[in-house]
Image (cartoon, rainbow, N blue to C red; front, side, top):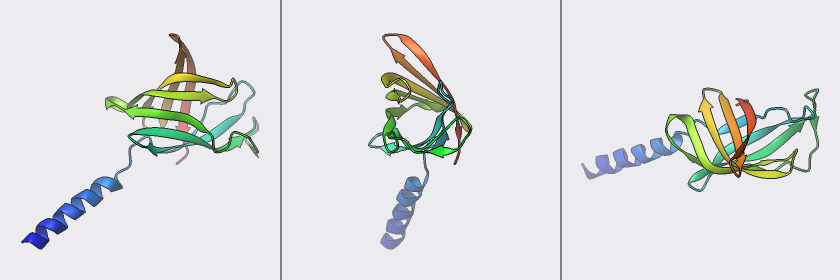
Length: 130
């Protein structure tokens, strides 16, 4: 009986760890003012979520080198109900500015927004790559 309880508890704990948050994955950003875009990988970082630039592309969609590869674009995003991620920050490489940020997930679309002193900039809608 004790072995059965231990096995059941182990399976339950393992199953919980196997379920990823829906925001986890690779996301294609909205093109910047020059038409360039990137792939940002979002995954847990502590109790929140962070996103790191893993690839950069020019306006023609051709992969290009970038000094921003491996830099955090999004950090400290806390998951709330109804697909809201808030209380984090986002860095806009094209403007080299950091904004307070929130994101809203709806299926394979992630709406991103950044604000400074109550003035918000729409970061556009990112699309899930995988």
